[in-house]
Amino acid sequence: MGDNLAGNLVEAGRAHAARPAIVDGGAIISYATLDDLTARASQLLRARGVGEGDRVGLMFPNVPEFAISVYGALRAGAIAMPMNVMLKRREIAFQLRDSGARLLIAGRGLAEEAEAGAREVGTECLLVDSEEFARLLDTVEPDDAVRPRGGADTAVILYTSGTTGLPKGAELSHGNLASNATTFRDMLGLRPDDIVLGALPMFHSFGQTCGLHTAIVAGACLSLMPRFDARTALQLIERERVTVFEGVPTMYAALLNHPEHQEFGVSSLRLCVSGGAALPLGILRDFEAAFGCPILEGYGLTEASPVVSFNRPDRVRKPGSIGLPIDGVEMCLVDDSGREVSAGEVGEILVRGPSVMKGYWRQPDATALAMAPGGWLRTGDLATRDGDGYYFIVDRKKDVIIRGGYNVYPKEIEEVLYEHPAVHECAVVAVPHPQLGEEVGAAVVLKPGSAATPDELRDFVKERVAAYKYPRIVWLTEDLPISAQGKILKREIQLPAGPVARGAVSQGAQQRTDRGARVPEAEDR
Image 1: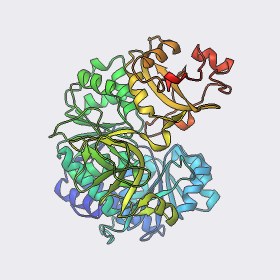
Image 2: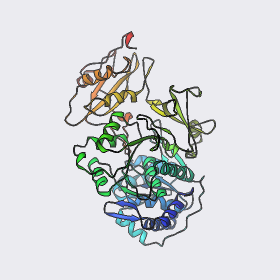
Image 3: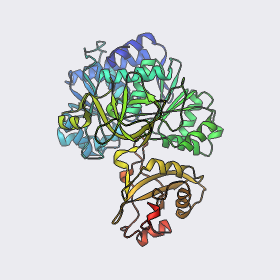
Image 4: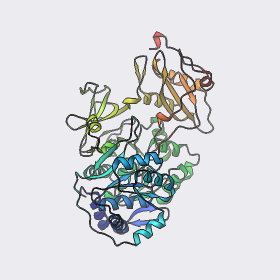
């Protein structure tokens, strides 16, 4: 396989022509057919004026049209710009304007927001459903050529979530993505007879690289799931004889906590992969025991295409660790002054290697801030490294709670909460406090049929961590805000009502916590 993603598909089409490339419900698309459909999509785009280097916005859930459109754009020499299907017109307009996209192709089910966003910036919008798309492709002859794009040429622009400002377009080259997909394939030992469940959204880097691109360079089959649902996932694993499941922690929790999970045949699974967020140790242990399949946890970010480190299937696996850097990628930990820290010390992860992005699209200042001298990418994630070189995520740098001058890492407290048998999901966040600056708060979702009071949960953590760390403010909620990628969106969590003053929560919050927070005594600190 080479550095041109479209060329890799053509090569897979020749090598695995009759094998299934994509399964969508009852429909099976072979590699030869996928090659033909993407060649037609390339010609369709060129007929609409799309040329080399033009940006093409794509808004689809996990359906064949997404894969066909991405590779059609790449064959035409264009830059694919997958967009989150949950975006609203204002956000769509921003990304189209910022990228200067020539065309937006979107699923008809997304018509209202997609059309409005495209109209605002004057971008052509092509709306299709599966049948319409198939008819359009039938009207053109396949363009078998792959436009010459090298490894350094931009293949994809993926916009970050914009948690600290307006979204930025991470510019990923053919070489970035091909390198990451090939390395991931080799690391997991993916083969043409593997069936990967495509439950991760392909408009996100995890699902796109580790699902779509990796399956293609392996000649494997990707079984698509437009929207994750635990029961449907279990049905697909059983029916399609899925061998590899890739998911985020919320998906593993949902599968494990589904009341009927033991009724499905999941013996075909040989490997599970977790990323996107830290996987609580309790969920990892319980899932492996219930499903009889190991979970390999890793770490990555959009700006690195995304995979940076992973636990290997053929090496010592350390639960709770994000493993070792993947082949060709370097990692190091530095303090705030840029000095590399020693084993066991907390530092920010820096990354260097062939999968690190070219930069942020047309934002040289933002790119300069993200890159450290020597080609290192600043990740904003905090970790430690043990004597064997394994990395352990501590938390996001921006998520650290500074309580009265002491650092509290939410992930550590969340791990303890997940040990409680009644906890289904939780998120530890900072709550403003006039004396301490920030107080530790925890929003908790209980498992169906389970019971626990906020007092009980708070005391459970208090018994297991230092006095300054446990959450003084705990509240129960029916659910937590989740992104399309399955990550818990801490910035959208509603804090208890009313101000927190001198350690006491307001009456509204007190009804949920049963006990107010208090200013810690000296021995608590």
